[in-house]
Length: 263
Figure 1 (cartoon, rainbow, N blue to C red):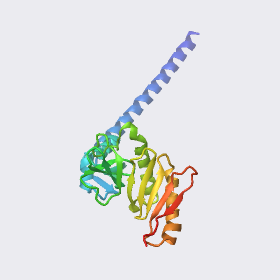
Figure 2: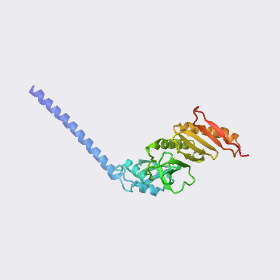
Figure 3: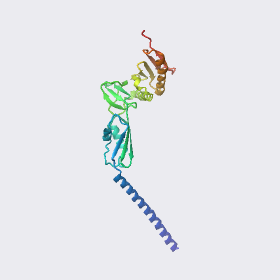
Figure 4: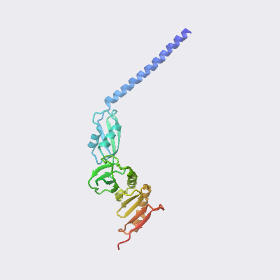
Protein backbone atom coordinates (compact mmCIF):
# COMPACT_ATOMS: atom_id res chain seq x y z
CA UNK A 1 0.00 0.00 0.00
CA UNK A 2 2.77 2.40 0.90
CA UNK A 3 4.64 1.59 -2.30
CA UNK A 4 1.53 2.37 -4.34
CA UNK A 5 1.12 5.78 -2.64
CA UNK A 6 4.77 6.66 -3.28
CA UNK A 7 4.40 5.80 -6.98
CA UNK A 8 1.22 7.83 -7.17
CA UNK A 9 2.90 10.83 -5.51
CA UNK A 10 5.88 10.65 -7.88
CA UNK A 11 3.54 10.49 -10.87
CA UNK A 12 1.55 13.49 -9.57
CA UNK A 13 4.76 15.51 -9.10
CA UNK A 14 5.83 14.69 -12.67
CA UNK A 15 2.44 15.84 -14.05
CA UNK A 16 2.61 19.05 -12.04
CA UNK A 17 6.18 19.70 -13.15
CA UNK A 18 5.26 19.06 -16.79
CA UNK A 19 2.29 21.43 -16.52
CA UNK A 20 4.39 24.11 -14.81
CA UNK A 21 7.14 23.71 -17.39
CA UNK A 22 4.59 24.11 -20.19
CA UNK A 23 3.15 27.29 -18.66
CA UNK A 24 6.59 28.83 -18.15
CA UNK A 25 7.60 27.94 -21.71
CA UNK A 26 4.42 29.49 -23.10
CA UNK A 27 5.01 32.67 -21.09
CA UNK A 28 8.61 32.87 -22.30
CA UNK A 29 7.53 32.44 -25.91
CA UNK A 30 4.81 35.08 -25.48
CA UNK A 31 7.31 37.46 -23.91
CA UNK A 32 9.69 36.89 -26.80
CA UNK A 33 6.93 37.59 -29.35
CA UNK A 34 5.81 40.76 -27.55
CA UNK A 35 9.39 41.90 -27.17
CA UNK A 36 10.01 41.31 -30.86
CA UNK A 37 6.93 43.32 -31.77
CA UNK A 38 8.06 46.20 -29.58
CA UNK A 39 11.58 46.18 -30.98
CA UNK A 40 10.97 45.53 -34.66
CA UNK A 41 7.48 46.73 -35.72
CA UNK A 42 7.96 50.49 -35.83
CA UNK A 43 6.22 53.02 -38.07
CA UNK A 44 8.27 53.94 -41.11
CA UNK A 45 5.57 54.94 -43.64
CA UNK A 46 2.07 56.41 -43.23
CA UNK A 47 -0.18 56.17 -46.28
CA UNK A 48 -3.27 58.41 -46.38
CA UNK A 49 -6.21 57.76 -48.71
CA UNK A 50 -9.59 59.42 -49.27
CA UNK A 51 -8.51 62.96 -48.44
CA UNK A 52 -9.23 66.01 -50.59
CA UNK A 53 -9.85 68.92 -48.23
CA UNK A 54 -6.89 68.14 -45.98
CA UNK A 55 -3.35 67.35 -47.05
CA UNK A 56 -1.58 64.17 -46.04
CA UNK A 57 0.70 66.23 -43.80
CA UNK A 58 -2.28 67.77 -41.97
CA UNK A 59 -3.87 64.38 -41.38
CA UNK A 60 -0.66 62.79 -40.15
CA UNK A 61 -0.01 65.76 -37.84
CA UNK A 62 -3.53 65.45 -36.37
CA UNK A 63 -2.97 61.76 -35.69
CA UNK A 64 0.04 62.49 -33.51
CA UNK A 65 1.78 59.39 -34.91
CA UNK A 66 5.46 59.80 -35.73
CA UNK A 67 8.06 57.70 -37.49
CA UNK A 68 9.59 55.26 -35.05
CA UNK A 69 6.42 54.82 -32.98
CA UNK A 70 5.67 51.21 -32.19
CA UNK A 71 2.78 49.97 -34.34
CA UNK A 72 1.33 47.73 -31.63
CA UNK A 73 1.39 50.36 -28.88
CA UNK A 74 -0.68 52.87 -30.88
CA UNK A 75 -4.22 53.22 -29.51
CA UNK A 76 -6.09 53.41 -32.80
CA UNK A 77 -9.39 54.45 -31.24
CA UNK A 78 -7.80 57.31 -29.33
CA UNK A 79 -5.96 58.45 -32.46
CA UNK A 80 -9.17 58.40 -34.53
CA UNK A 81 -11.07 60.44 -31.92
CA UNK A 82 -8.21 62.95 -31.83
CA UNK A 83 -8.13 63.30 -35.62
CA UNK A 84 -11.89 63.83 -35.95
CA UNK A 85 -11.79 66.35 -33.11
CA UNK A 86 -8.99 68.41 -34.67
CA UNK A 87 -10.08 68.20 -38.32
CA UNK A 88 -13.73 69.18 -38.44
CA UNK A 89 -14.45 67.92 -41.94
CA UNK A 90 -13.36 64.36 -41.14
CA UNK A 91 -16.38 62.09 -40.88
CA UNK A 92 -14.75 58.68 -40.49
CA UNK A 93 -11.21 57.32 -40.13
CA UNK A 94 -9.88 53.77 -40.48
CA UNK A 95 -6.34 52.78 -39.47
CA UNK A 96 -4.86 49.45 -40.55
CA UNK A 97 -1.40 48.04 -39.92
CA UNK A 98 0.61 46.92 -42.91
CA UNK A 99 3.43 44.93 -41.39
CA UNK A 100 6.23 45.34 -40.87
CA UNK A 101 6.36 49.15 -40.90
CA UNK A 102 3.41 50.78 -42.70
CA UNK A 103 0.22 52.36 -41.38
CA UNK A 104 -2.64 52.77 -43.86
CA UNK A 105 -5.01 55.61 -42.92
CA UNK A 106 -8.27 55.89 -44.86
CA UNK A 107 -10.45 58.94 -44.25
CA UNK A 108 -13.95 59.95 -45.28
CA UNK A 109 -14.57 63.68 -45.37
CA UNK A 110 -17.88 65.42 -44.71
CA UNK A 111 -19.55 67.27 -47.53
CA UNK A 112 -21.52 70.44 -46.91
CA UNK A 113 -25.24 69.73 -47.19
CA UNK A 114 -26.39 73.27 -46.44
CA UNK A 115 -26.05 76.42 -44.37
CA UNK A 116 -28.18 76.78 -41.24
CA UNK A 117 -29.11 80.29 -40.11
CA UNK A 118 -28.96 80.70 -36.36
CA UNK A 119 -32.13 82.54 -35.43
CA UNK A 120 -30.45 84.00 -32.36
CA UNK A 121 -27.82 86.14 -34.09
CA UNK A 122 -28.27 85.58 -37.81
CA UNK A 123 -24.91 83.88 -38.40
CA UNK A 124 -24.71 80.90 -40.74
CA UNK A 125 -23.32 77.46 -39.94
CA UNK A 126 -22.32 74.96 -42.62
CA UNK A 127 -23.76 71.55 -41.77
CA UNK A 128 -23.34 67.99 -43.06
CA UNK A 129 -26.28 65.77 -43.93
CA UNK A 130 -25.74 64.01 -40.62
CA UNK A 131 -26.17 67.24 -38.67
CA UNK A 132 -22.52 67.97 -37.88
CA UNK A 133 -21.62 71.67 -37.67
CA UNK A 134 -18.59 72.24 -39.89
CA UNK A 135 -17.84 75.93 -40.05
CA UNK A 136 -19.30 79.34 -39.13
CA UNK A 137 -19.84 81.92 -41.86
CA UNK A 138 -21.21 85.44 -42.07
CA UNK A 139 -23.12 84.59 -45.26
CA UNK A 140 -24.73 81.41 -46.56
CA UNK A 141 -22.84 81.54 -49.84
CA UNK A 142 -24.22 79.34 -52.57
CA UNK A 143 -25.33 76.61 -50.19
CA UNK A 144 -28.86 75.45 -49.49
CA UNK A 145 -30.32 77.82 -46.90
CA UNK A 146 -31.96 76.38 -43.78
CA UNK A 147 -34.02 78.77 -41.67
CA UNK A 148 -36.32 78.50 -38.67
CA UNK A 149 -33.91 77.07 -36.10
CA UNK A 150 -32.22 78.61 -33.08
CA UNK A 151 -28.96 76.79 -32.36
CA UNK A 152 -27.77 75.95 -28.85
CA UNK A 153 -24.10 76.76 -28.18
CA UNK A 154 -22.92 75.99 -31.73
CA UNK A 155 -19.25 75.21 -32.31
CA UNK A 156 -17.22 73.58 -35.07
CA UNK A 157 -17.21 69.81 -35.06
CA UNK A 158 -20.22 69.38 -32.77
CA UNK A 159 -23.66 68.03 -33.58
CA UNK A 160 -26.31 70.59 -34.43
CA UNK A 161 -28.18 71.23 -31.17
CA UNK A 162 -31.44 73.08 -30.55
CA UNK A 163 -33.81 73.65 -27.64
CA UNK A 164 -36.19 70.87 -26.62
CA UNK A 165 -39.15 72.50 -28.37
CA UNK A 166 -37.32 72.33 -31.71
CA UNK A 167 -36.10 68.73 -31.55
CA UNK A 168 -38.73 67.62 -34.06
CA UNK A 169 -37.56 70.25 -36.56
CA UNK A 170 -33.94 69.24 -36.06
CA UNK A 171 -34.66 65.56 -36.68
CA UNK A 172 -36.76 66.44 -39.72
CA UNK A 173 -33.86 68.44 -41.14
CA UNK A 174 -31.34 65.61 -40.72
CA UNK A 175 -33.73 63.05 -42.22
CA UNK A 176 -34.58 65.31 -45.15
CA UNK A 177 -30.96 66.22 -45.92
CA UNK A 178 -29.99 62.54 -45.82
CA UNK A 179 -32.84 61.62 -48.19
CA UNK A 180 -31.91 64.39 -50.62
CA UNK A 181 -28.23 63.41 -50.52
CA UNK A 182 -29.07 59.75 -51.11
CA UNK A 183 -30.88 60.62 -54.34
CA UNK A 184 -28.32 63.27 -55.35
CA UNK A 185 -30.92 66.05 -55.15
CA UNK A 186 -29.18 68.41 -52.71
CA UNK A 187 -27.70 70.56 -55.46
CA UNK A 188 -31.19 71.38 -56.77
CA UNK A 189 -32.54 72.38 -53.35
CA UNK A 190 -32.40 76.11 -52.65
CA UNK A 191 -34.01 76.46 -49.23
CA UNK A 192 -35.65 74.62 -46.33
CA UNK A 193 -37.86 76.50 -43.86
CA UNK A 194 -38.49 74.88 -40.45
CA UNK A 195 -40.33 77.78 -38.82
CA UNK A 196 -43.58 75.79 -38.55
CA UNK A 197 -43.98 73.18 -35.83
CA UNK A 198 -45.92 70.91 -38.19
CA UNK A 199 -44.74 71.56 -41.75
CA UNK A 200 -41.47 71.67 -43.69
CA UNK A 201 -41.40 74.04 -46.66
CA UNK A 202 -38.73 73.52 -49.30
CA UNK A 203 -37.78 75.37 -52.49
CA UNK A 204 -36.66 72.99 -55.20
CA UNK A 205 -35.06 73.49 -58.63
CA UNK A 206 -36.29 77.08 -58.76
CA UNK A 207 -39.68 75.74 -59.80
CA UNK A 208 -41.48 74.04 -56.93
CA UNK A 209 -42.46 74.97 -53.41
CA UNK A 210 -42.64 71.60 -51.65
CA UNK A 211 -44.71 71.25 -48.47
CA UNK A 212 -44.20 68.16 -46.28
CA UNK A 213 -45.33 67.14 -42.84
CA UNK A 214 -42.72 67.49 -40.12
CA UNK A 215 -43.26 63.82 -39.23
CA UNK A 216 -43.12 62.63 -42.85
CA UNK A 217 -41.25 59.68 -44.25
CA UNK A 218 -38.80 61.87 -46.13
CA UNK A 219 -37.34 59.01 -48.16
CA UNK A 220 -40.81 58.50 -49.61
CA UNK A 221 -41.55 62.21 -50.06
CA UNK A 222 -38.26 62.79 -51.87
CA UNK A 223 -38.99 59.88 -54.21
CA UNK A 224 -42.39 61.43 -54.94
CA UNK A 225 -40.71 64.77 -55.64
CA UNK A 226 -38.27 63.17 -58.07
CA UNK A 227 -41.13 61.45 -59.90
CA UNK A 228 -43.23 64.62 -60.10
CA UNK A 229 -40.29 66.61 -61.43
CA UNK A 230 -39.47 64.03 -64.12
CA UNK A 231 -42.98 63.09 -65.23
CA UNK A 232 -44.80 66.41 -64.95
CA UNK A 233 -42.80 69.58 -64.28
CA UNK A 234 -39.84 68.95 -66.58
CA UNK A 235 -41.68 67.06 -69.30
CA UNK A 236 -45.10 68.75 -69.48
CA UNK A 237 -44.81 72.26 -68.07
CA UNK A 238 -43.37 75.22 -69.97
CA UNK A 239 -39.85 76.00 -68.75
CA UNK A 240 -40.94 79.19 -66.98
CA UNK A 241 -43.84 77.65 -65.05
CA UNK A 242 -43.68 77.18 -61.28
CA UNK A 243 -45.97 75.58 -58.73
CA UNK A 244 -46.49 73.85 -55.39
CA UNK A 245 -46.24 70.20 -54.46
CA UNK A 246 -48.31 69.77 -51.31
CA UNK A 247 -47.95 66.52 -49.37
CA UNK A 248 -49.54 67.70 -46.12
CA UNK A 249 -53.24 67.22 -46.91
CA UNK A 250 -55.39 64.81 -44.93
CA UNK A 251 -55.92 62.42 -47.84
CA UNK A 252 -52.21 61.56 -47.75
CA UNK A 253 -51.80 62.13 -51.48
CA UNK A 254 -49.37 64.51 -53.21
CA UNK A 255 -51.11 67.47 -54.83
CA UNK A 256 -49.33 69.33 -57.63
CA UNK A 257 -50.66 72.82 -58.26
CA UNK A 258 -49.32 74.93 -61.07
CA UNK A 259 -49.13 78.67 -60.46
CA UNK A 260 -51.34 80.85 -62.60
CA UNK A 261 -49.52 82.13 -65.69
CA UNK A 262 -48.77 85.86 -65.80
CA UNK A 263 -49.39 85.91 -69.55
